[in-house]
Image (cartoon, rainbow, N blue to C red; front, side):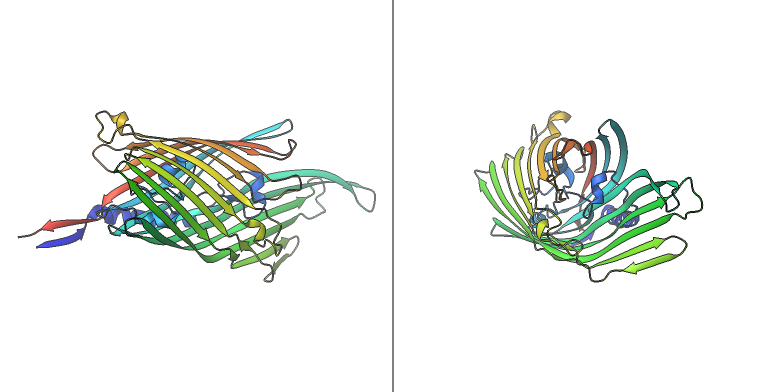
Length: 422
């Protein structure tokens, strides 16, 4: 008699997933030091998992059974029906800032995401996971002097800081129809807090109390992503994938509070202020040759200019992103270890949704990556190194460039095995 059973290793990985989900959700999100994160909802994170990190962050047209790709939920139907995938990623970023003759460097690390993909059958996949949607973190100060009513000169200091971010937990599924068309859907739950604080103090006058102000934006919001991928195979060697993902815009469920502390504490809630998410359209294509070479490109359009922020719909800016990526595997049947390594590279260019009077910020990044298989296992270690620069409309603005290393571990484990009993 044939009885399907779940291997113990699968249970272990599921337990690990639960623990990682918990650790991600409760960990502090002080995972950037960019002064530009003080605007809007912070710095937007791209949900490029696994090998996509080394390919410029492409995803809309990317379709492989060995990767999890929440950028397009239609990709979940690319599954190995006997295996499930458990995936988590870490990053470390070294950033250098320069303003006129002032220079500073910061190093920070972060858990970026954790996810699994489960095959329901050979044409139906399910995925769930957690990743950061935006991140917030900065600290700077300024000082000056003023004259009081009695003519005394008072020196004051303003200290500004922020922590937090918005996380995105998702549950998605997709099905492949007629061996060509895959349709998918993500149900997303966005949650988190953005905390912006300032402290006004008079360091040389103890008779004047300092004033502390905290503005807290708490998000709890559901939305969906819909995706499709059209797959066309040619001569068993060539495959073309066209992909599209769409997210409708809308108002978020938020709570905005303001707390001021001097001698007393005053907390105010502002229920009438509206905050929104943009309509998002992503288009992508990829070409695969002999399962060894992948070439892909993405285009993303986010209508942040139509999303209200503090009740104003034009305070943010339209954001677009273009990315190109490539992956090369020397041989499908490797005689040497280097022939089993996947070599990756990518390039991306994007506008910022943050609006300045002088113009928009832009970001240019270049990445290199390696997919390192572990011997005698289907598990892979993915490494990516990215160099990027924030392009400012004015040279007098703070200049920022970064080096980021990403590490991703993809466990590809047997989900169901058949055991024979006499």
